[in-house]
Image 1 (cartoon, one colour):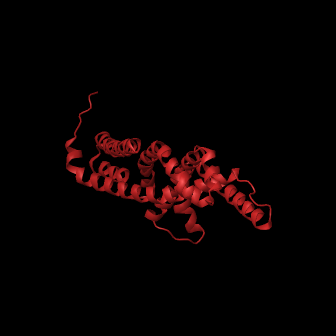
Image 2: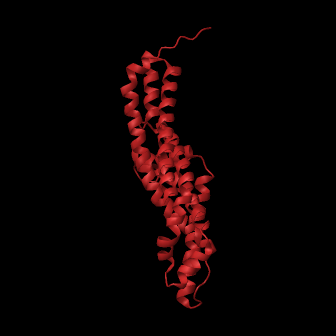
Image 3: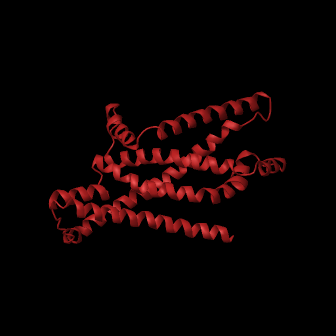
Length: 236
């Protein structure tokens, strides 16, 4: 049996597919911003597990207790998210919240699920980057009078950022591909748009090839941008 390709179907519906790709990029871009914010916060919290009591007075013990509480909450969040499928998380947000009386549309549901998922992975990347910074520099900054957050902002994060760019790039590329799962809740992303084209044309193979190529172009673009920033960082 010889399969006759009809890529003219793809050409005819390319504007429609590109509109879906635009929605995918928009959702990905917003998720990247929100998940970076969440990931940095949770990643910093995840480093509190190695905290020590600096002052044994009541205030020092209270701060130590709060740090450990925050550490365990952050750890539970990361382990739950990384240990469950993204598709299940999307279903929990989109179908679960309404059952609790919280009405939510598809777009914000997809955004929340993707942010929570990507944020957990970014948190581990941030934690790893922070912990890779030489502890001697931290001690030196504290001896100069820097508090924890000043040390984090001016000493640790600038060095950690250079080390976390490569894994962050991989996470962003994975995020673009993961957005395809929101098509299951009828968000008009690239995958959902491809499904609609197939429903009208019955040319699934050609359409899925086109969809795959568009995803590949988007992820390669992310990789190229990342390499550009890596080279700039190495030059400094």
